Amino acid sequence: MTTKNEPRWAIRKRFGSSAALALAIAAASTASAQQIGSLNPRPLPPLAHPDDPKTPARELFARKTSGAPMAARTIGFYSKGCLAGGEALPINGRTWQVMRLSRNRNWGHPKMIAFLERLADKGMKVGWRGLLVGDVSQPRGGPMLTGHASHQVGLDADIWLTPMPDHELTRQEREEMSATMVVAPDRKDVDPNVWTPAHTALIKAAAQEPEVDRIFVNAAIKKALCREAGNDHAWLSKVRPYWQHDYHFHVRIKCPSDSPECKGQPPVPAGDGCGKDLDWWFTDAVLHPTPAPTPTPPRPRPITMKDLPPACRQVLLAQ
Ligand SMILES: [Zn+2]
Image (cartoon, rainbow, N blue to C red):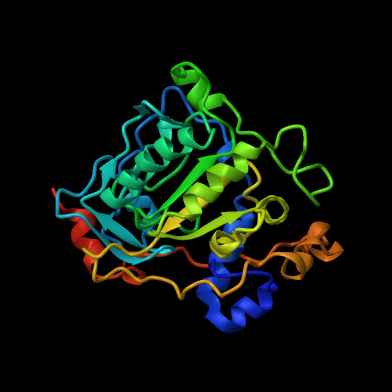
């Protein structure tokens, strides 16, 4: 998740297999914001052997429906960690609404929840009429059964590129409505029929918040932001091109000061990342990748509790 315009092999070389793995999973779980949710989500059945060390951690964390009653702190890395004292973003605010309630992923570190509420208000001031908030984290963070390699520590949030409608959405709308595809069919720029100056203003407002570490958007969106930024390019360095992210943008905030076990990322490279830095994303090989070889290689072993920081066991078991 630290990439600019590097091919995957280069990322693997720099960050080892776990980063490559995170990328592979991120790329494999396409358009998860578009997956329709259920109006009657059924609780997951109990696990036969929850204490088996081979049990994927995602099966354990997905079964926790409330936050760990502990002081708030983030433990581990964005794609390998968990969250103590998670707080839920209220599903309705004056300037936001939460989508896909059946997923129960509107939980975050209190700093993230406060950030989202602040951004929703700030967005109104720059012409964005309210946030539709997608996935933040599970109540106790951790790996998930579907989608996302990251979003594990309550410091990542997906925000739809669709402004909030002027009414309180029904349960059905929240599960079934689609976010807006803002990238043009040729993938080389935004779609002028849907992209507005308010899209740029909202992403800029988010990037200018000091606790924001990175924002992931499709390369075509970054290209549009570069074009529309005018003379002020300082905020653009935090806005990173990434696969997908054409219906939503992803905001990642920095490790909060109350979380000594939180592992942050190196700062983003200097420079706005515009112009030539984006060229690789628009090469034929990236826009039109050759199909994966068949049969596809086996998926890597899922994360188990022993792969996570030891404190995540207390988070999982806290009553
Ligand atoms: Zn995301």
